[in-house]
Amino acid sequence: MSEIVVSTQIPAPPEDVWAYVRDISSHVEWMADAESITFTSESSEGVGTSFDCVTKVGPIKLLDKMEITEWEANKAMGVKHSGIVTGTGVFTLDPSEVGTEFTWSEKLEFPLILGGKLGAFFGRPILKAIWRRNLKRLTAQFE
Image 1 (cartoon, rainbow, N blue to C red):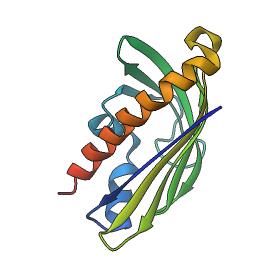
Image 2 (cartoon, rainbow, N blue to C red):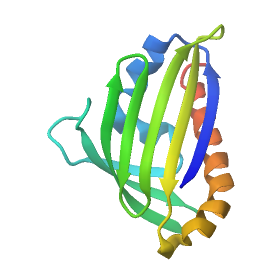
Image 3 (tube, rainbow, N blue to C red):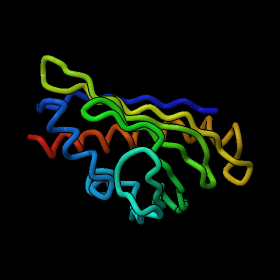
C-alpha cells in the first residue's frame, strides 16, 4: 500500500472551501487527472454516494469506482476506491491563519497489471506531483 499526502493553504475559510468541494461533480474543474465523473447512486453528496471517475495519468486511463465513506461538513470528505486501483482517501479542511489548510491523503494499492509494489514505488512521486498541481488549481478557485 502506497501512502500519498499533499496539502496547501487556501485563502478562504473552511466553509467556503467546503461549499465548493462538496460538489463532487466540480472536482473535474480542478483535478487535471479526472476526465469525467458519473454518479452511480441516487445521491450526489453524503456518505454512501457512489460514482465512477475516468482518470487519466499520461497514457494510462482508468475507471476509478468510488464511494463516499466520510462526510463531515466543513471538515472532511473520505472515499473508498474499488476500481483497478484500490484504497482509501480523504480531504481534510482545517482553519489556518491564511484561511484553510486543505490536506489530501490517499492510501492506494496498485494491481499487478500496473506493476504492483514496483508500480506504486514509481507511481507515488508522479501522483504526488499531479495532486500538488491539482491543489494549486483548487487554490486558484479562491484567489
